[in-house]
Image (tube, rainbow, N blue to C red; front, side, top):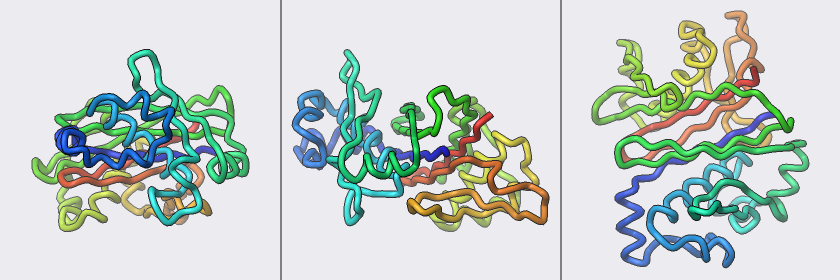
Length: 232
């Protein structure tokens, strides 16, 4: 089993909130707070923890997994690199039989994106795609390959809402890792038992839903982002 979560945040917004003392630092433990001593580290910690919550089908509030059930581990640069699970989060990880995890960060412009992946095996070989739709410049990028993707005429209908933009980002991410752009247009995004988004493909096209192991969606003011993971 594989599950993933992504989150994106503006570095300028975090810098402003941090300087104003308005960052929601109460979501972090005392151990974590000892490492969060700058706006850059706060940004990494914030997107990392939200990406982890999303991988468990949870969020910051009103979910059975509390933010304090997820404890970030930091490297010598005080950047989050690993996660320890407690309470309800650990129960979900155990129920999913997850054995390992990875945490990656991507930068584009003044934005920071975190991708967190839970895997059922210790040495999983995964192919990842993270697609960003820029609603201002009306273009798309795959952050894993650093390629700019073309918007097709049919994609223009997605530009009318944030929700549709997120689905477009997922579809393009699926396209990138499967090399089946035509088929991805017939799929849609559903939800698994965790409440996390999953890719559901039209079986009539001969493309099974379990071909895609995990997807995730996130948005901010200027961007919609989608991630897709397959076990290769």
